[in-house]
Image (cartoon, rainbow over the protein chains, first blue to last red):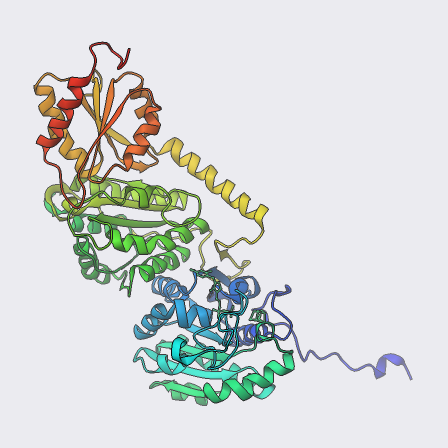
Length: 263
Length: 359
Ligand SMILES: Cc1ncc(C[n+]2csc(CCOP(=O)(O)OP(=O)(O)O)c2C)c(N)n1
Ligand code: SF4
């Protein structure tokens, strides 16, 4: 018997999406920013929109997202990505525009910008990474830091008496009439990651259909600043974050329902 | 085009439209609100973008976004709003995209008042945000000049991919004067070759002001400084009157320059050899011409509606060759020609009979 006959034909089961560049990222081991990037990239590929997409990077750990997505991209000032995306989309309604923002970026310094972009029903998509901490600056308290959570600027744990309770942004944005689709998903296991991808896909479809503003909040791990191993960090998302930040769809406006049913 | 009676703010807005502005983003503030209101009416009519932003911070970042997408974009505000926009100016300058901003200055500091002022000279010419650069700053002294400079602002912004500010005060913004608008230019059909247009059949384009590597960021700064040198070389603009035989030259821009003109004429009638130098570009400051004048005049009198800001630039241009005196009003007070005339004649009386002070 010839050896060649026994070799199975190669089948690609896993490849880099065309919307992700073939470059190493600077993310820490166990960080789920990379997972979120990949999900967005797969969706851009599957919807065939890579060549007409413009991404807006935040200030935060994902500041270099524009180097990783294989699309046109720009870098906003801290918190201002929704304003920048508004400017882009208003002059190029034919483009697909998304912002990718952390919780300090979106829920602290840029709260005004995201709320008003959503209120106006701006036709872009926001990927919101909630990791309950300021990653880039070395682990300070975020507006999403959980009660009692230790951070470098809440060394005794977040004291809700003085720092208030964490903001549930998906619920806040869902309350705004201009938001068409708002969901929260988590990246702590494969099942949730698959659900996250579906939500991201729906969010971009909402933009393509011109139905309104769309946002997917992703519960994300920062093992470095949580001082945890990657597996511990995944467990912490599930056990500590999910109970405070329930997963689900918080806004499904008219017309979006049909998109949810699509595969 | 016919001469018509136009209010400064409306003239600025309409001139921008005719210069081909594709997107306007702004937030209401007196004394520039008519500009925003004119845009609210006209831009949608023409199928162009208008957004009333939630703040000046958002407005300038919307301009930044639209500019990255290759559109001619602008915003307008007044002093407190310009303070808020400083962050955006810096990012726009750092990433080298064109943007046009109108500042109808008012009295400060703080909330101050809504009266005409020139108190923003430092905040617009010195840096306009953090970093190490100057924006281009144009200062009209009449409604007609406001129109002309508005058109020039877009051309300079595009040419140099830089922030251009048109600064005036409430007097010019609110005043009605006969002026002529330019013809309507068609909107630019092609996007510039650096703009974000989707990576179709080409490598992705990136617009950023971020560069973590110090040697590389120094390179970026060197490039930016080379561009600023070129602007300094080619774009110094000014107007002057009766300077040929002048012993004393009054230096004032915008409204202050215009009021000073009346005072200078009166001084001439009284037999004083006085001239007027009116900077039109505040940055680049018209230093070349002014230092040539410093070679042959006996003194400068700087007139501003602030406590003495352009004064620094005049002193630098004069290079210690001649005395530089100052007359200013603050808090939204507008000087009348008589007080400037008084300042002129007081200084003129002190001029020595010799051609040089102190000789
Ligand atoms: C105006 C301004 N203020 C503060 C900073 C410093 N800064 C950089 S990133 C950051 C927080 C980022 O946290 P987050 O948005 O949660 O993103 P992460 O790094 O966790 O992904 C801060 C405060 C800045 N760059 N600009
Ligand atoms: S600091 Fe945290 S959020 Fe930033 S890359 Fe590292 S793990 Fe990710």
